[in-house]
Structures are given as structure tokens and as C-alpha cells.
Amino acid sequence: MLYDTHAHFFSDDIVTYPIDTTGAREGEDVLRRRIMDRPSTPDVVLASWAVNGVAGGAGVQYNSAYKTDNRYLLDVSDAAPDRISAVVILDPQDSATPQVLADMASEHGIRGVRMTGFPDEAGRYPYFESEAALATWSAAERLGIAVVLMYLPGRKPSAVALGRIGELADRFPRLAIVLDHCGWPAAQGAPDYGMGDAHRALAARANIYFKLTTINLNQLENAGVPAPAFVKRLVELYGADRIMWGSDFGNTEGTFESMVERAKAATAELTEAQRRAVLHDTGARLFARRGPAEGR
Image (cartoon, rainbow, N blue to C red; front, side, top):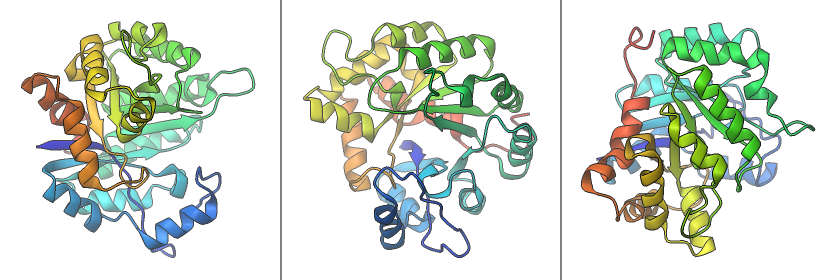
């Protein structure tokens, strides 16, 4: 069985669940048409999971459509708590966020909070490293939910972002920190496969995890880098118990079946135990939904 740590849910019922497509990567009109023509609802996702051997997964709040309005994702996860958990997006610098997180953990069993954004003019990332944001980190650690980070712009590593993430991992040692898209390693070949000094420095921080997604596999394919060699290097550097697979279904183009087949192929050079960890166990351990009292 597999565990999908990165599925996006969105509905064509834009009356009940209004969308905000401001800043959409593909353009607002294109995204709106896609939402209306191909909604990523639980019926669609759960059916895809069922026929492809996926035991469950994490719904990641779809920033492109809903920003910090998590109502649809929470309704989706509440309707199928044995299969779907929620990773929400909130403003980490809002003083109300720690209490909102506590309420969501108690009432909805959320398993993570995602922080994403661009650096400021000085090249820093105040949305996750400012003093105001640290209260959100403390709340997540106390609640036992993960902080999921996707710094932008993506597609290439940022030594500044990765360095600060390492410092925060030291400051919050009991907190699971998950880097979306593996923290954007460069799509390069041997010997390092894009894991430069800033990435390698994270190996000693056992509470930092790496999410391997279809976006990474697309980058590797476009660069002509063999995905199995890249994944083997990831596991050599960090350990299979810190690597997890996520489809990015609902955002990245392609059928879910093809995403699963590519993930399996990418782990071909691992041992069976390592494959189980990357494709299921690591993600399920961090993100499978728990009872309201367990993470507190």
C-alpha cells in the first residue's frame, strides 16, 4: 500500500466554497476553468486511491484556490477521517493563529500547517522566520502537528531558506518539519544529485523530513537525470524514514495512475524496507489522522 502526503482538494461548488485565484501560477482564468471542469473532490481522489493501492493521505490546502480559507479541506477530511487528514494554511504571523491551530487540532484532527511564500526584499522569509511566526511554530510543536514548508520561488534551492530552516529545527527539536518538493534540490546528476551544501547540512537534523513529489520527478525527467539514482541518494543522505511520497494530484498535470507508477519506478534502487518507508510508512506516521487528544 501507498500513502499520498500531497493531494489537493477543490470543488466546483464555488457558491458554498468561494475561490480566490489571485496570483495563480497558470493564470486566474485558466485555473477557474480547471476548477469548474475538473474538480478534485473526495469522490475523484478516493476512487483514484482505491484502484491504485493508496491506503490514505493528506489533503494539502490548495493555496491557488482558497488561500487561508480551509473550510472545504476540513469538510473533506471530516467526511472521511479514516482516509484523509488535513494540512491547513493559515497566516503564521497572525497572533490568532496559535489558538486557531489548537481548535482545528481538537475539532478536526489536523496533522499539519503549511507555510508558503516569497522572500522579502532583503531575501529573508518573514512568514516563517519572524518573531511573530515563532508563536505558530511553538503551537505546532505543542500540538504535535507538522510544519510543512514550501518556500518560493521554487525550482531551485535557496541556501538562505535552508539555513534558517536548519536553525528552526534546532530550536524546535520535537517538531516535525516537512520540506515540500524536497526543498527544491537542483535537478542535477552524480555525485550529489542536487543536494548541495545547504541540503547536506540538514542531514544532522533528524526532525526535518523531505516530501518527494511529481514536481521533483518532472524536473528530473526534464533534466535527463535518472529518478531512481536521485531517490537512492536522498535515502543515503537522510534515511528512508525521513522521505515520503506525495502525488501533487489536483495541481500537477497527469493521471493519478501515472503518478503512482512513476513513484514506484523512482524507488526501484531501494531495498523493500526502504521502499515501504518512502511510499507509505514515513508519510502515514506523520500525517495519518489521530484522535483529538493524541497530538496534545
